[in-house]
Length: 304
Image (cartoon, rainbow, N blue to C red; front, side, top):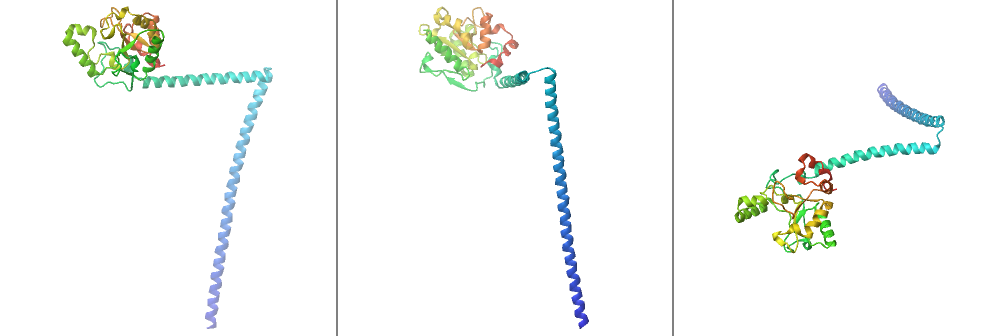
């Protein structure tokens, strides 16, 4: 019995020793792991310090090079600053050129190319074409104040400036026609054909899809004397004023005398942008005198 109890006590002692051994082993392992991690952190810190030190050395070397160069050239501090400013200006010019190119690209991709196409029996607008946005022309500038006249929203400011300046100059001028849809043009041409016959109607009225009015950038002007008949409009002060001033607001006469498309229409004016209108005025040319490729070069500046 005593021997059995002794064996049990010895076994408990052995278990206790095993547990203690495992415990100390874990502690040692933990300490070793901590030391390894600390060692790695110290190593990373040393590497960062070395890298920073290297960068500082490089900076000092650059500064030293600049100072030596300055001394060799006998350059003053003000001259160094001036040279630095020149470099900064050069970089700014390069940035501006890149920025301008980006702006030009955006204008090309976002401006409707149809707005400068040659129509009038040349190019065709489909029956679904409508300008993205249309503004209503103020009634004080329209021939019939009870009727709604619309113009392309980006052309609207140019048209209002033209009408305001004409009014300031004492010129009697009113808009009698503006945007016309494909369907409206078809109805108008049909009515003219019935009244005047197809041959005569084709001399002064475009078929649907070929009318500049469908672009929303074209208006017909009149005044109180001429009214809706347009009779004698070419002899009015209104027409004379338009000839001398409309180009400043981006508008050109589409069908001058002896044009190859329609009868002379002194009342019919189309917005093509100030740059193109000015160039046509200076060169005494008509829009349809230019090739489409020449006209397309102005699409970037259409609404500038």
